[in-house]
Image (tube, rainbow, N blue to C red; front, side):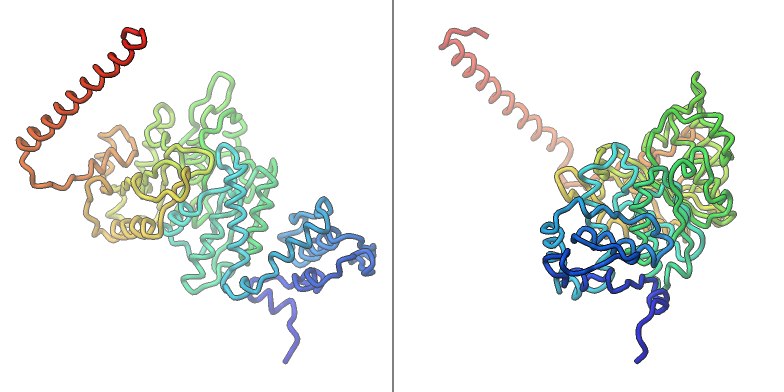
Amino acid sequence: MLPVEASDFASRSALFLPKEAQYAYLVALPENISDAGLTTATGEPINSLGEVVNNAMELVEQQSEQLSGVLPKNYTIFSDELLSELLRIFNNSALDEVGGDIIGRIYEYFLNKFAKNIAQDDGVFFTPKSLVKMIVNVLEPTQGVLLDPACGSGGMFVQTGDFVEQAGMLANNTMTFYGQEKVEYNAQLCLMNLAVHGLTGVIKSGDEANTFYHDAHNLNGCCDFVMANPPFNVDKVKAESAQSAGRLPFGMPAVNKNKEVSNANYLWISYFYSYLNEHGRAGFVMASSATDSQGKDKDIRQQLVQTGHVDVMVSVGNNFFYTKSLPCSLWFFDKSKREELLDKVLFIDARKMGTMVTRKLRELTDADIQKIAATYQAFAAGTLEDVKGFCAVASTEEIARQDYILTPGRYVGIEEQQDDGEPFEEKMARLTGELSELFRQSHELEAQIRERLRGIGYEV
């Protein structure tokens, strides 16, 4: 049998790790590191377990250009006792028995916990998995260029990779991932997230990746897919710089007296559309207020509708984000819509969908996601029938009559209530009788309270 080489790992989208970076090596180290005679790759002596782990991080980075300079190398801030205990905890045969992308799932778990505890107010770096999965299941990306210009920790890429794998293909062979993320730490999270899921991508960060002012990958008009969860309601965007950066096919949103865009929602929306090629599709999360904002926003929204490329609008309920309880919307564009659908938009009101997984956090279930995706597929096939309170197909003429408002609730109507069989007159007589009895009881309780207060010297 031939020895395993780095090329064998590369063919399976995995990293080859030198012995000193392998977990089995780390857990087998003696308790007293300074007496073990260990050295780094450059020959420097290693005197603590923290230095051993730092060296392992260096060796991992050497195996992946994508991870160069990304992995943390400050493990010396922890005691050897703590690091040894952590290594022991994860030295568990159960992890080997789980199968599948266990490391990626563990990483997602800690990202989730991280987001809950110290997420930014706008949730800029972590998009709830169920919303990402919803976007991916509607767009069904299997090949082409995918851009996330506000990529945070890379959830859109990971879910796309899962979708492609479930379709029997390798994402690294069929998809090309590009990301922009202004916050460098978040971009590092993204690169690590890609690596532990066996994915590759080009992620740019820092000032050059500020999407308001830079098309960092020169992808305007070139993308098969755009997916994003941008920060909502960003203000103080320099109008002149934003205009110079282009990607604004419908013009600028409103500019204030300070020559700033005070709400950048429609900058983002314009970018997502502009990045698409002639058959491209986009799906993104946006503040619900963007569906009916007025002024220049409404002008841009009208032009969008008139292109025929607004495909689906989905209202989502409260509590989907870790740091905000406000509702949001999912928007979908499709530049490859069939001719007979160009004057139609699908509206879905999913505000009642989802389940509370904690006291403050709601998630869409797999059944919810499948229902929405199936509804979209029926729309795309031309077989969908409206369901009161849930979904409706509206023409662009009807949207124009509604002043180009794209709030799904305006089109889907109110869910029909099931008839309980009780005649109206009988029901009203019963309900008013019950109300009268409640009034009587409240008067009795009020009299008792007044009497008790009077007994202790207080008149009310």
